[in-house]
Length: 206
Image (cartoon, rainbow, N blue to C red; front, side, top):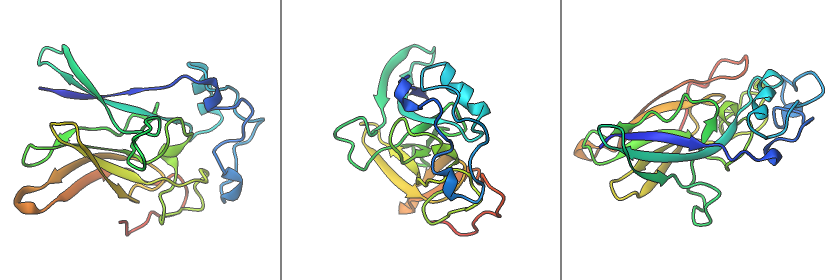
């Protein structure tokens, strides 16, 4: 059956404090902070997106759901990807960035046993993750002064998840991943974008 990624913004006013200086930790970067008097709106939908005019890197992480549909588009089931709002998630968590929707392309592994996609290793409702640096690939000219891993998620037919972290795509997003696991290779091929500053991008990632 076809699958489709879905996401949900939690619509909490506390997600952003009106007047907050953004991006997070921007004062510690070479790029500095946005001009003006701070974020114009709190986290209430839809006004939260007014903050994009103040902070060009603006986005908020949100939960991911994998929806299973019939060929005619009727819903069958929905599977929530492990995240920080689930007490059992521990360190195994993945989110998308709302409203940036460049990530979450879905692919089947080459043997057809796993579904794969990419996201961010960060708590739900965190600001500006999609333009953050990745650990070990820090661009000091990026105005977002925090770092989070990107990761590839693989899920089997029973809903069991496994995550593989990477510091690729620093400053931007990993968009797509496919697992080549024929002949026990277990190799991910990924695509994405990098950079949110003025420095050349890293040549080596892990």
